[in-house]
Amino acid sequence: MPSSDTDPRLLLLSPGDTVFVLRDQIAADEEILVSGQSVRLPQPLGLGQKIARIAMGKGDKVIKYGAPIGSVTQTVAIGDHVHLHNLKSDYTLTHLRGGAPAGATS
Amino acid sequence: MMRGWQRADGRKGIRNVVAVAYLVECAHHVARQIAGVDPEQAHVIGFPGCFPNPYAQKMMERLCTHPNVGAVLLVSLGCESFDRFGLEQVIKASGRPVQVVTIQNTGGTRSSIAMGKAWVSAQITALSDQPTVPMLVSELIVGTVCGGSDGTSGITGNPAAGIAFDKLVTAGAACIFEETGELIGCEEIMATRAVTPELAQELRDAVTKAARYYATLGYGSFAAGNADGGLTTIEEKSLGAYMKSGQSPISGLIKPGDIPPHGGLYLMDVVPDGEVRFGFPNISDNAEIVEMMASGAHLTLFVTGRGSVVGSALAPVIKIAANPHMYARLTEDMDINAGAVLDGSTTLAAVGQAIYDKVIALASGEQSQSEKLGHQEFILTYKSFEPIGPACLPM
Image 1 (cartoon, helix red, strand yellow):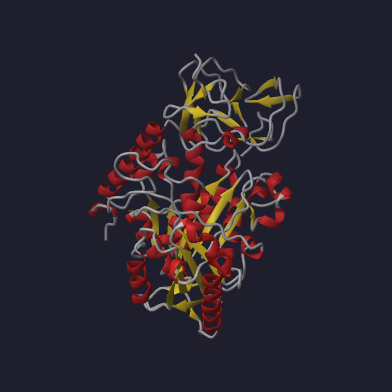
Image 2 (tube, chains in turn green, yellow):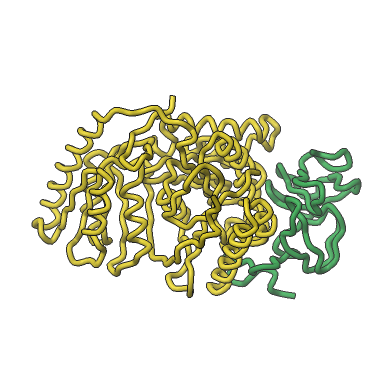
């Protein structure tokens, strides 16, 4: 499944997906190839984390497993980490330990 | 070679244990002490509530007549409102030996424990003489749950469990997946797999009900640990969970305690009907395993990313590690290392086959890791259900 224009540690689960999933840890500041672009991660990311495969605008659906998993809340560039800070559920908000629902702030 | 214990209702058990069932929390200590007479063969189950609940009554009836159960000791305090006579009649009618110890009528804790231990010991001796009969894969009911999910659950463990499910369904077994609160966001994809359009609508309605229920509670089925592992939203977690259903057509929708009428793939609707009354539908993973057992599951596949260590009373649990780092830390607690898919040392197809082989091995007498470690978790709480509609089980 790894394509030659993307680091083999990034897994594409379904052909139409807009995110890759990390199959291994990637260190901060390491130069990696994502969809043909060279990207440096600002912080280390672990197994299971998501990285944008394409650029996305606010409100765009994120596709994983070939299906939408929520909408982005801000502009996302190729190679950006996609998680609680820029992706929100289209169903119920995600509640975390701090008590505040993730994605609740605009 | 698969073998089972023949029960009067036609089903076969892959274990032959004595259930020691407390009928209110006040009888739990006595039940636990009694089961201590043989921790491997005597399993504690029970309902903690003092007030009656038809769901709990039905669940206890199903569990006490589960095919893996050969005899039942009911432990009652005496003043709880659980219908112990009704339960005793159901067990008797199933052909199983049953005995009631009522603590308030038996001289208290010490004498109740002594009386219970004597009865359970005698039953275990009698059960050990019961012959087994050959058993087919098509006579198995297998459940699946996932817990302690992370970003790997949906990539490795759940798709591998789905492959094992496809193999089991092809061989004629009944397979059950759940839970509708964890399928929010995949209802349309799932509906396309229903064997009839009416069942498709029932599947959609079940997920809609779950979404409303969780919205009323103000929470999704999403724990902080899920986000630490890379999952962001409920629908993302749902799709990962959905992967464990495999590719087979969906033959029916059941509720806890409904037993699949024939082989095939079934969705279990675990979210209560009506107003939100008793809090969270399932307060922890074992509540789901208990409902699988009440619907006749001989064993349960449990996919875990963060690393759950639980097993279950009555029916073995196969633990499938989705995360290779967790597998390295908790190896003794895991039966299958699906995480090995991530480093390319194995494939999803090979892990799916290994899970299928493990099911056959456990039904042939092998113990799962959680059985070896003595895990017998059990939890049952209050719920309320309406019966399923006619469209839920098409012929």
